[in-house]
Image 1 (cartoon, rainbow over the protein chains, first blue to last red):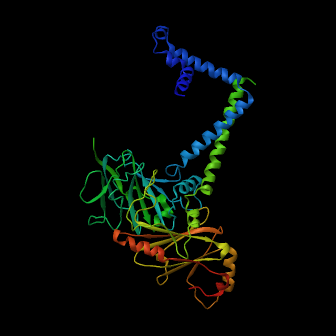
Image 2: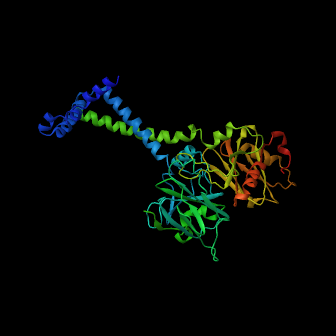
Length: 242
Length: 199
């Protein structure tokens, strides 16, 4: 079985199997010839293709690309419909009947019950104020004030599965839990290292992380477009582990 | 037609087909999804109380493999009541407590009504979800002298669900938040009781 497989592979890829032998290396350039051969084979295939083959090709192309793009568009976050405010993106419409079909598909795939305008609003951030993507190896200061709301929570999520052996100590803060300055402003240190004050540990996963700020019972949900960049917390990178 | 032209036509029709498949799949996902909130609420049986979708007392973080965000918020207890207005109007009664609570009524296309505990009258919040016909009937049967504190909401579809969220601002409040979700009652107003004044 393995022998026949190897033989098939050898027959299918003659150019590669021939390269190690000294004769073919002495012959002038086997690689351009194989490239030209491939193009010629394609051209021949196009010329000889019957109508049935072409129909099958079109069907395969349509179904393949259609399913792949639909999966891609509904896999991660909401593809569009957000309102940019500094580093944050507000999603006021994802729970309303006016939500676009992509947002509804994303909610259905994730099993998420979105916040509606009367309940609150979700804001997400995947980059800092200077536009660099949030990295799990770096330390960030999330500082300032939030838009007016009766309650809010700030949570952090890494990309990919979390390690079940090392459950995260803390994935978020609520408005009641944090320590504030005397004027009501706050600084949350998002860092892989222990920090004084409001330390939000980085998720153990490597690579990109995202922040989610959920405002509950907030008047700004109805007018998210009027949010000012001074009304949302600033995200600044303060250092990076090498 | 030249062979190359035929190939181009096949490729173009494939791309057009790809667009159609894409649109159809995106529109079908909410209907076919099994992780969506509504089918989950329907498959679980809970008598007159919300199905706890997310309880916060355990403290463990449940993150799926594609956790783009912690879904849902780790400090918010969530419960669901599914309704089918063919059985009669749905009454959701909540008592407000120290914790912030919000109720949202979702139809098939999204939430069409939401209210928080700030709208409560003397600590009680009563929502009645009904169809247009049931609403007209309730209005016709209403007693002029009785003051009703019910919030009557006309639903666009006959099937949907009510989401109850209670926010635990501190970890010590999490058991209380779970209990507050469970304390909400979701009952079907039987047609015979329609003439009964609300409350």
